[in-house]
Length: 203
Image 1 (cartoon, rainbow, N blue to C red):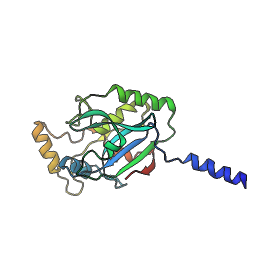
Image 2: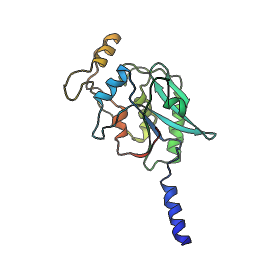
Image 3: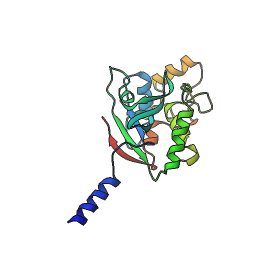
Image 4: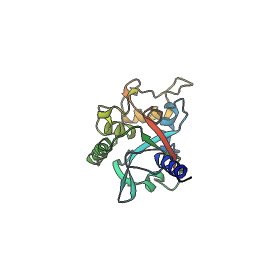
């Protein structure tokens, strides 16, 4: 019996759902036009509804999230604020973990995350342009380890093959063409990566 109990405890520890530094937290769609546009054109076979993401860092027993947010740029915020950035929206949020990650790999990513604090948000979603959009920021942190890959971006609705109105308005205001087909990344695509394991739903 003691041996059986020990085995159960070992198995339980190996599948711990406690948030760890390096975990990736994905946030669901909000009611904004741009958030809706991101979600609509980036669906995968997993049918997730993520439009934002960040990396967790446990510091003095408090979970912080480093992320790049529209209107803020790259910031560090408590997990609670990341999960509920305003009073009018309720967001779903899930935690994923990089498979077979090492301590040096995670420490390097968190160090990069801190170094990039204050960088602007990349509103064009073109990798070569200044700043970082949310998934680009996470991609950059793990680029040396090839954790995530880039794919040709689309801003079109898969069912209608037309550009989403939110993207049409966004790029018209910027005065540039929609960068259809350029390499990039997005939260739904990264959540579907085989390099990640699902840990738990937060809300």
